[in-house]
Amino acid sequence: MKDILYRLFEHQFLGKEEAKEILQNIAEGKYNDCQISSLITVFLMRNISVEELTGFREALLEMRVPVDLSEYKVIDIVGTGGDGKNTFNISTAACFAVAGAGYPVVKHGNYGATSVSGASNVMEQHGIVFSKDISKLRESMDKCNMAYLHAPLFNPALKAVAPVRKSLAVRTFFNMLGPLVNPVIPTYQLLGVYNMPLLRLYSYTYQESGTRFGVVHSLDGYDEISLTSAFKVSMPEMEKIYTPEMIGFKRCKEEELFGGETVEDAAAIFDAVLNNTATAPQKNCVIVNAAFAIQVICPEKRIEECIAEAGESIESGKALNIFKKFIQINK
Image 1 (tube, one colour):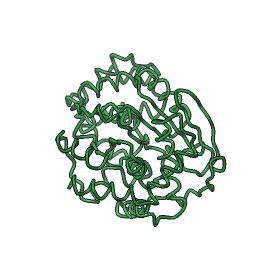
Image 2: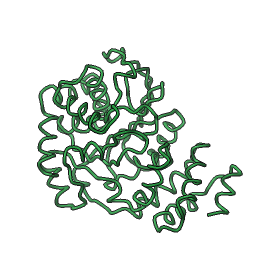
Image 3: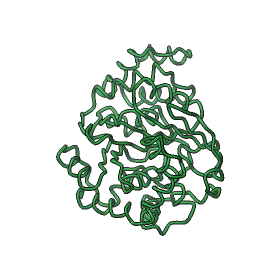
């Protein structure tokens, strides 16, 4: 590792196979926490390359606990994290809105590393017990169109670095990898990223992988569609910049999306969204992210149709009913 670090400190890049081997070594416990921290720091100071990202991804996918849910043709909605905004769990709530609209969802998530509440935090707050039992995951898909995969159960490398990530409390290249290593390898994915270079990087990576994708970025730095500014959407057939007003939404303020100081605060907002009692900015942010996820699955639909579907899922109580069934199955 010392030689690798020296090369990286001299602004050299890793090849795909080198990157792959490093991740395998991390999973096998061959490096200490200080070495892993130094490696992480390199990728805070410069952008990761397509070769490096691909190598890291291949290692994680080869080492994963595989989950075959391919017949469901699922979507995952996820952000890279690391935008420093500490929003509530927008993508997780959007997953239930999409499931409520009738589309199968497998959410891959983890505890918050750079924010108060990650997807796994809000799940645990509701009594969810994480499982890698395929029969339990299939039951969840069959009965409520939604399954949740807690990342450390399915990927030993993510578990190995969890203490270091939590101690550093800054975004790392593992934030970038998380969305790419959902163990089911979903048919569809909506990914939010915190800057434009990452939007391009992921678009290239997804084009190679065969996943039908949408990558979104709010131009003021959010790793989701925040409605606080204009935002860019990249899909295989188009790239487009939208403003909130173009698709019928009022602009939000940053403080209106704040997730609070505790997991309990974030979970209360999550519940309010699904109960259709949240503020307009909170609810609209979930709806717009769910809508673009639906458009990833159904590119023939106009975004206005997708917004109507997502809104109806929340306002009719369908999303809430899905969540209630999900809790019953997964406690």
